[in-house]
Length: 216
Image (cartoon, rainbow, N blue to C red; front, side):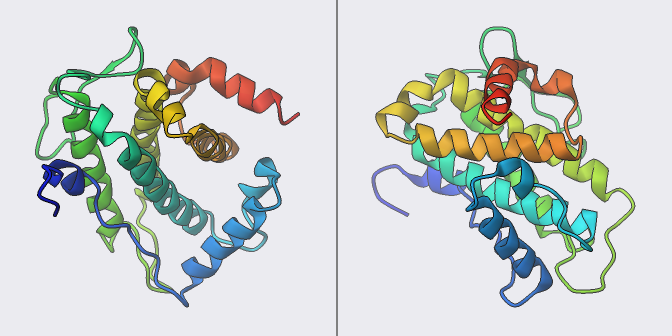
Protein backbone atom coordinates (compact mmCIF):
# COMPACT_ATOMS: atom_id res chain seq x y z
CA UNK A 1 0.00 0.00 0.00
CA UNK A 2 1.23 3.47 -0.84
CA UNK A 3 1.77 6.10 1.80
CA UNK A 4 -0.28 8.64 -0.11
CA UNK A 5 -3.60 7.66 1.43
CA UNK A 6 -4.38 5.10 -1.26
CA UNK A 7 -5.49 2.48 1.22
CA UNK A 8 -9.15 2.87 0.34
CA UNK A 9 -8.73 2.41 -3.37
CA UNK A 10 -6.37 -0.52 -2.95
CA UNK A 11 -8.94 -2.03 -0.61
CA UNK A 12 -11.73 -1.43 -3.13
CA UNK A 13 -9.78 -2.96 -5.97
CA UNK A 14 -9.77 -6.57 -5.11
CA UNK A 15 -7.19 -8.84 -6.66
CA UNK A 16 -8.35 -9.98 -10.05
CA UNK A 17 -10.24 -13.23 -10.01
CA UNK A 18 -8.01 -15.39 -12.19
CA UNK A 19 -9.25 -18.30 -14.23
CA UNK A 20 -6.69 -21.13 -13.86
CA UNK A 21 -4.51 -21.50 -16.95
CA UNK A 22 -4.94 -24.79 -18.76
CA UNK A 23 -8.50 -25.21 -17.48
CA UNK A 24 -11.49 -25.48 -19.79
CA UNK A 25 -12.73 -22.11 -18.54
CA UNK A 26 -9.38 -20.61 -19.49
CA UNK A 27 -9.81 -21.99 -23.03
CA UNK A 28 -13.29 -20.46 -23.16
CA UNK A 29 -11.93 -17.10 -22.05
CA UNK A 30 -9.29 -17.29 -24.79
CA UNK A 31 -12.07 -18.09 -27.29
CA UNK A 32 -14.02 -15.05 -26.07
CA UNK A 33 -10.96 -12.81 -26.44
CA UNK A 34 -10.23 -14.10 -29.93
CA UNK A 35 -13.80 -13.54 -31.17
CA UNK A 36 -13.85 -10.09 -29.58
CA UNK A 37 -10.84 -9.23 -31.69
CA UNK A 38 -12.93 -9.81 -34.81
CA UNK A 39 -14.87 -6.65 -33.98
CA UNK A 40 -18.29 -8.29 -34.28
CA UNK A 41 -19.57 -8.08 -30.71
CA UNK A 42 -23.00 -9.58 -31.41
CA UNK A 43 -21.25 -12.70 -32.67
CA UNK A 44 -18.60 -12.66 -29.96
CA UNK A 45 -21.15 -13.01 -27.15
CA UNK A 46 -22.98 -16.01 -28.62
CA UNK A 47 -22.64 -19.36 -26.90
CA UNK A 48 -19.87 -21.29 -28.70
CA UNK A 49 -21.12 -24.52 -30.26
CA UNK A 50 -21.22 -27.45 -27.89
CA UNK A 51 -20.45 -25.38 -24.80
CA UNK A 52 -22.31 -25.27 -21.50
CA UNK A 53 -24.38 -22.11 -21.04
CA UNK A 54 -23.64 -21.83 -17.30
CA UNK A 55 -19.93 -22.10 -17.90
CA UNK A 56 -20.01 -19.47 -20.65
CA UNK A 57 -21.94 -17.10 -18.39
CA UNK A 58 -19.53 -17.81 -15.50
CA UNK A 59 -16.41 -17.07 -17.57
CA UNK A 60 -17.86 -13.84 -18.95
CA UNK A 61 -19.15 -12.70 -15.55
CA UNK A 62 -15.63 -13.04 -14.12
CA UNK A 63 -14.27 -11.14 -17.12
CA UNK A 64 -16.79 -8.27 -16.71
CA UNK A 65 -16.00 -8.07 -13.00
CA UNK A 66 -12.30 -7.68 -13.85
CA UNK A 67 -13.02 -5.09 -16.55
CA UNK A 68 -15.23 -2.95 -14.28
CA UNK A 69 -12.70 -3.31 -11.48
CA UNK A 70 -10.07 -1.83 -13.77
CA UNK A 71 -12.29 0.91 -15.22
CA UNK A 72 -13.52 2.08 -11.83
CA UNK A 73 -9.96 1.82 -10.51
CA UNK A 74 -8.89 4.54 -12.95
CA UNK A 75 -11.41 7.06 -11.56
CA UNK A 76 -11.49 6.26 -7.81
CA UNK A 77 -9.83 9.56 -6.92
CA UNK A 78 -12.81 11.37 -8.49
CA UNK A 79 -15.42 9.22 -6.75
CA UNK A 80 -15.36 10.32 -3.12
CA UNK A 81 -17.71 10.69 -0.15
CA UNK A 82 -17.81 14.41 -0.96
CA UNK A 83 -18.37 14.18 -4.72
CA UNK A 84 -20.80 11.26 -4.58
CA UNK A 85 -22.60 11.20 -1.21
CA UNK A 86 -25.22 8.84 -2.70
CA UNK A 87 -24.89 6.00 -5.18
CA UNK A 88 -26.75 7.32 -8.19
CA UNK A 89 -27.04 7.23 -11.95
CA UNK A 90 -28.35 10.71 -12.69
CA UNK A 91 -31.06 12.48 -10.70
CA UNK A 92 -33.75 9.83 -11.20
CA UNK A 93 -31.90 6.70 -10.08
CA UNK A 94 -30.49 6.12 -6.63
CA UNK A 95 -29.26 2.78 -5.31
CA UNK A 96 -29.27 1.59 -1.70
CA UNK A 97 -27.17 -1.39 -0.65
CA UNK A 98 -28.37 -4.71 0.74
CA UNK A 99 -26.82 -8.14 0.26
CA UNK A 100 -29.47 -10.21 2.01
CA UNK A 101 -27.03 -11.65 4.57
CA UNK A 102 -24.85 -9.04 6.29
CA UNK A 103 -27.06 -6.10 5.37
CA UNK A 104 -30.68 -7.16 5.03
CA UNK A 105 -32.38 -3.77 5.00
CA UNK A 106 -31.22 -1.52 2.15
CA UNK A 107 -28.92 1.24 3.40
CA UNK A 108 -28.29 4.60 1.78
CA UNK A 109 -24.56 5.16 1.38
CA UNK A 110 -22.03 7.06 -0.68
CA UNK A 111 -21.06 5.77 -4.13
CA UNK A 112 -17.51 4.70 -3.10
CA UNK A 113 -18.93 2.81 -0.11
CA UNK A 114 -21.68 1.21 -2.23
CA UNK A 115 -19.19 0.16 -4.91
CA UNK A 116 -16.85 -1.23 -2.26
CA UNK A 117 -19.72 -3.28 -0.77
CA UNK A 118 -20.75 -4.38 -4.27
CA UNK A 119 -17.30 -5.44 -5.49
CA UNK A 120 -16.55 -7.24 -2.20
CA UNK A 121 -19.87 -9.09 -2.47
CA UNK A 122 -19.25 -10.05 -6.12
CA UNK A 123 -15.72 -11.24 -5.31
CA UNK A 124 -17.15 -13.43 -2.53
CA UNK A 125 -19.63 -15.02 -4.96
CA UNK A 126 -16.94 -15.61 -7.59
CA UNK A 127 -14.61 -17.17 -5.02
CA UNK A 128 -17.31 -19.56 -3.80
CA UNK A 129 -16.50 -22.92 -5.43
CA UNK A 130 -20.04 -24.17 -4.84
CA UNK A 131 -21.39 -21.28 -6.95
CA UNK A 132 -18.59 -20.82 -9.48
CA UNK A 133 -16.87 -24.22 -9.70
CA UNK A 134 -13.49 -24.01 -11.42
CA UNK A 135 -12.87 -27.76 -11.52
CA UNK A 136 -13.91 -29.77 -14.56
CA UNK A 137 -16.95 -31.92 -14.00
CA UNK A 138 -18.16 -30.07 -10.90
CA UNK A 139 -21.76 -29.11 -11.68
CA UNK A 140 -23.11 -25.59 -11.34
CA UNK A 141 -25.72 -25.21 -8.59
CA UNK A 142 -29.43 -24.89 -9.42
CA UNK A 143 -29.47 -21.25 -8.34
CA UNK A 144 -26.44 -20.32 -10.47
CA UNK A 145 -28.40 -18.37 -13.07
CA UNK A 146 -30.22 -16.23 -10.50
CA UNK A 147 -26.92 -15.44 -8.73
CA UNK A 148 -25.26 -14.54 -12.06
CA UNK A 149 -28.20 -12.26 -12.93
CA UNK A 150 -27.89 -10.46 -9.59
CA UNK A 151 -24.14 -10.00 -10.08
CA UNK A 152 -24.60 -8.57 -13.58
CA UNK A 153 -27.48 -6.33 -12.49
CA UNK A 154 -25.24 -4.86 -9.79
CA UNK A 155 -22.19 -4.52 -12.06
CA UNK A 156 -24.40 -2.55 -14.48
CA UNK A 157 -24.91 0.03 -11.72
CA UNK A 158 -21.17 0.73 -11.62
CA UNK A 159 -21.16 1.41 -15.38
CA UNK A 160 -24.22 3.64 -14.95
CA UNK A 161 -22.59 5.59 -12.11
CA UNK A 162 -19.38 6.10 -14.12
CA UNK A 163 -21.32 7.32 -17.18
CA UNK A 164 -23.49 9.75 -15.22
CA UNK A 165 -21.15 11.10 -12.59
CA UNK A 166 -17.62 10.60 -13.92
CA UNK A 167 -17.68 10.73 -17.70
CA UNK A 168 -15.68 13.99 -17.67
CA UNK A 169 -12.91 12.23 -15.74
CA UNK A 170 -13.06 9.29 -18.16
CA UNK A 171 -12.61 11.69 -21.09
CA UNK A 172 -9.82 13.53 -19.31
CA UNK A 173 -8.02 10.19 -18.93
CA UNK A 174 -8.83 9.34 -22.58
CA UNK A 175 -10.53 6.17 -21.42
CA UNK A 176 -13.88 6.71 -23.18
CA UNK A 177 -13.21 4.26 -26.04
CA UNK A 178 -12.21 1.61 -23.50
CA UNK A 179 -15.31 2.29 -21.39
CA UNK A 180 -17.66 2.28 -24.40
CA UNK A 181 -16.24 -0.96 -25.80
CA UNK A 182 -16.43 -2.67 -22.41
CA UNK A 183 -20.01 -1.49 -21.82
CA UNK A 184 -21.12 -2.44 -25.33
CA UNK A 185 -19.69 -5.94 -24.85
CA UNK A 186 -21.46 -6.17 -21.47
CA UNK A 187 -24.81 -5.02 -22.88
CA UNK A 188 -24.70 -7.30 -25.92
CA UNK A 189 -23.89 -10.20 -23.61
CA UNK A 190 -26.77 -9.56 -21.19
CA UNK A 191 -29.15 -8.98 -24.11
CA UNK A 192 -28.10 -12.21 -25.83
CA UNK A 193 -29.07 -14.28 -22.77
CA UNK A 194 -31.72 -11.96 -21.33
CA UNK A 195 -29.87 -11.56 -18.03
CA UNK A 196 -30.95 -8.10 -16.86
CA UNK A 197 -34.51 -6.80 -16.71
CA UNK A 198 -35.11 -3.87 -19.08
CA UNK A 199 -36.29 -1.68 -16.20
CA UNK A 200 -32.90 -2.09 -14.54
CA UNK A 201 -31.21 -0.87 -17.72
CA UNK A 202 -33.39 2.27 -17.92
CA UNK A 203 -30.72 4.74 -16.68
CA UNK A 204 -28.60 4.08 -19.79
CA UNK A 205 -31.40 3.24 -22.22
CA UNK A 206 -30.49 5.95 -24.75
CA UNK A 207 -26.84 4.93 -24.80
CA UNK A 208 -27.82 1.25 -25.14
CA UNK A 209 -30.02 2.07 -28.15
CA UNK A 210 -27.24 4.14 -29.70
CA UNK A 211 -24.66 1.37 -29.25
CA UNK A 212 -27.10 -1.18 -30.68
CA UNK A 213 -28.09 0.89 -33.71
CA UNK A 214 -24.46 1.31 -34.80
CA UNK A 215 -24.31 -2.42 -35.13
CA UNK A 216 -27.28 -3.02 -37.37
